[in-house]
Length: 70
Image (tube, rainbow, N blue to C red):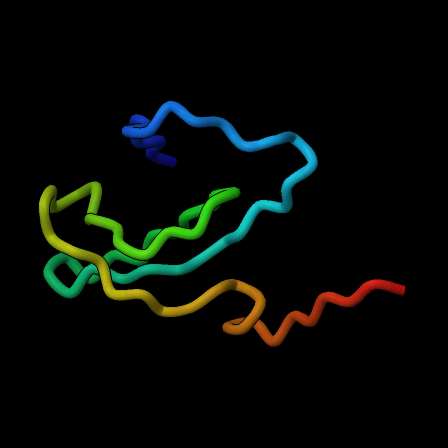
């Protein structure tokens, strides 16, 4: 697993739920998952460098996982 350096040093509160999203690189055909407490609207391929990734969706929507409060 590759952990990229954090550009913005702000940290999220520990009680915040992590959001997991799936991205795909058109150039090298890699799939990358990003787990973040903040919304990610743009990401770049860690393998190719400056190639923008294509957003595939959140893990919940891709896998059909539903979350609800009981």
